[in-house]
Length: 314
Image 1 (spheres, rainbow, N blue to C red):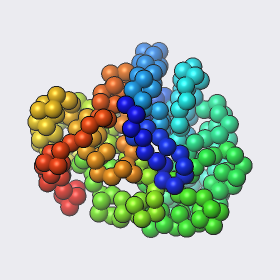
Image 2 (cartoon, rainbow, N blue to C red; image 1 turned 120 degrees about the vertical axis):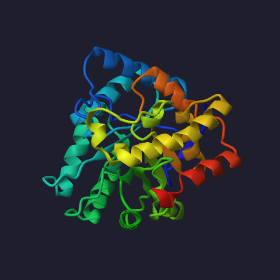
Image 3 (cartoon, one colour; image 1 turned 135 degrees about the horizontal axis):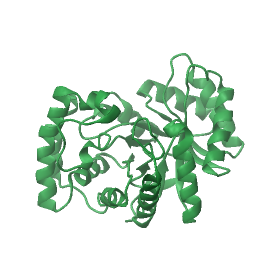
Image 4 (cartoon, one colour; image 1 turned 45 degrees about the vertical axis):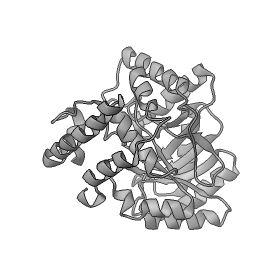
């Protein structure tokens, strides 16, 4: 597949579907560990590239840097062009913009690159003003260490502040990475998607398969590990997801595809600024995710899904 989408006004074009790498190297949440995981993830990486998925999202926080190291190693081994996004974590003990430069240098080292394609602020932290962070990002762009900059988990107001500060330097806000999936449609009602359209910012949709719940056509009524503490997997919420997945499953079976592919295609249909980044720990997952490209749900199918997962029901 060769579907492409822009990272806002940055001039960078990426595959319409990306790959999230939170699970790569992360033991506490995803249970990473041992050579089988490394081998399977390497196969997933190659399968992604073979399917035309060349945009990979990571962060210094994922696996304590393990995700960045693994992604960088796999990219060098493959010897093929990839586009990488990573994120700075504004923890309470990192309240100076100077720490961003140090963190960026460490990310570049772990990834084994001199320039990062996209660098984002992982989330807004109330004790740290947005403007100094944008100033630091602008410095990173001017130093040639970063090609484009963005934010993650920012609301519409924060996006606008970031955008306006960067505009002083003639640098666009390239992306806002937020949770967005068929069961979590808040970007449609909280102003984030509207701001992306107005400001020409890409919306990178994380958790497009609800942390893997939709990766299984038989959505479980319970999940194990730390995921069970997340809101998405509790009581009525999980039962609602399970019930609504029946409709996705019916559409998938009629099309000869999977629930995950329907869910990802639904996102791709919402706006051409949206870039979903599903995770993939195995080659089969990567190939399945890529199967969401190259076709579109019909207007009738979209209407059915939209009615069942209306934003005001979230």
